Structures are given as structure tokens and as C-alpha cells.
Figure 1 (cartoon, rainbow, N blue to C red):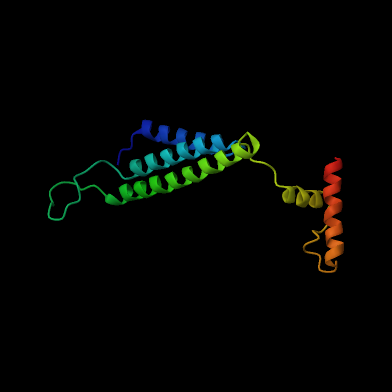
Figure 2 (figure 1 turned 180 degrees about the horizontal axis):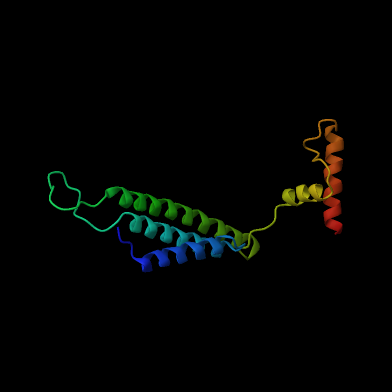
Length: 149
């Protein structure tokens, strides 16, 4: 089985660049990275399937036949990528409508949990000894500390 080194390098470059772009905060870059990584994976599927052969038709037995499984996997991957791209486009469009940019924002709750972790305190939602009013007061203190810093 002889694989074309150029195709392997192209697929590796597409996947590597796609992963790099997915790690960005901009949804547009995440979208481009997803498309690049999807195309790289599809190319790897086709490389792994081996050389081209005859169509796998019942009754035709002379010569090597192509394996239809990698082709089916690529078609499935294309459909999944299309659905994910549509979802990311909708998220980027909505983010642009609300904030006039498509950067992913930090979540306030995540920041509060991070602040509690840095202070080495237990989260008030897990502390069963506090009443609900005491827990709300502790959460308000964390938000006030974030606002002042």
C-alpha cells in the first residue's frame, strides 16, 4: 500500500491549521478552522481507503473493487460539518447583532468560580451548612469584589 506523501502532508497541514484556528476566541476563525479540519479529516479518510478500484457492483468480480465504507464515512462527515458550520454561522451572526463583534465572551459565573478557586474557598452552591440567604450574600460579595478589581 503506497500512500502519496504530498496528500498526507496536505491533510496534516489542514488539520494542524484547523486545530490552531479553533483555539481562537473569534467565532469566524473557529468557523474557518472547523471547515479546514473537516476537509483534512475527509482527505485522510480517502488516503486511508487505498487506491481507487472498480465500483462495488454485485456480479462484477474481475479486478480490485473499491471499498465503499470510506466514501460513506466522508459523506457522513460532510453532512455533520455542514450542520456544525450552520450552527456556528448562526452563533456568529447573533453575537455580531448583540455585541458588534464575534469574540466569545467570558461567563460571569465562570469568573466567580475562578475567583473562589483562587481564594481557595468552597463554592457556596456546594456548602450545605449555609442557608439560601447566606449563600446569596456570599455570591454577592464575590461579584462586588470582581466589580471593584
